[in-house]
Length: 430
Image (cartoon, rainbow, N blue to C red; front, side, top):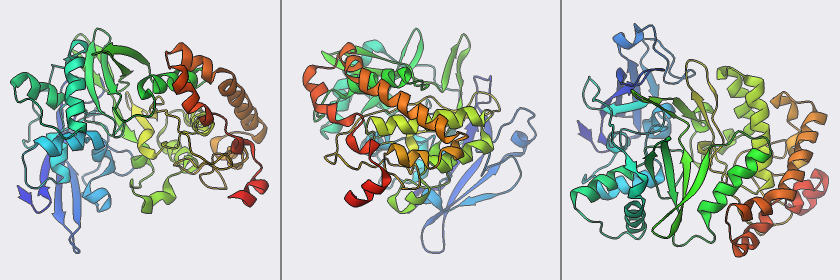
């Protein structure tokens, strides 16, 4: 069934902890609202509610009851459902190849591949289809790179059956990773997200991101596993999927929610008042099985992003995962430096203290208690991390193969002068 904003309903499937097959969790419907904006409604199926192993899709806003849930946020899509949809890159590929005059939010969910982020699936039938078992292999990377280049350049892509299969698997069904070209590949160790450099990149983004993940680990941060491989003479970053666990019977899927959903906000600048590390730490208390551990981990990531000038740390670049019934902060990912001109003030995407988004040590210390930290302990963590970043960013980057030219280009990202400016003095230059 379709409308002016595309398909109007679908079934939502869930792969429960420890399972390798989907079951039907409920039904999602979108209808026009009073002012023309879509309204989304979701209801759990009775069989799912009666399942003793059932888990909520969202433990805060979609708890396990027979209520008909309703939302007008995110164009009528519940955040936990949107998290399982395609990101900007996946949407761009769907728009080119779906062959539909009108694409709505449910269409994006339906046209994304089965192997999306987290443990959800979507379909038109009350019974879920069998999950897909075929994945790109690392040997396919050369073709994947060529097709990604064609999508970026808005060129025609081959129409052979092999190309169609590879094209479909370019649609990484995840909001985790943003707009960069990518695909899922499989090797003996499991599933990886392959992230490709773009022709217009200012520096080697694949090797830079890999180096930042390594640098984060040296700062005591739990970061996603990654490595660099070569394909068609080009570097490709492979990031291990932390929402999949390979077994003899198939892949176990880990349920996942973005910080955008946890914060109950949207990814528009108008909703930015809830983009906050402090609020995220408080929301994690409600769902995390180790709230103090996750708060400390989040504080470290906040400081690290400030120290490398990662200004793309928006709520979709943070997530929580649930391997069983308890939630925890997902490993850090998408850690990328930037080089703004200002040496006095740089802002994170999310608020980190009394002075808002200012990527500044004193600013972060103003809210240390909200992360279960004494100010002295928080200051010691920042001091230690700053020393580590200053001492090892260059050596880490060079060790991971980043050219000297690229190191020079990103050098101004690290521990910029404004990081240690007092808030009083900062007020004179902001």
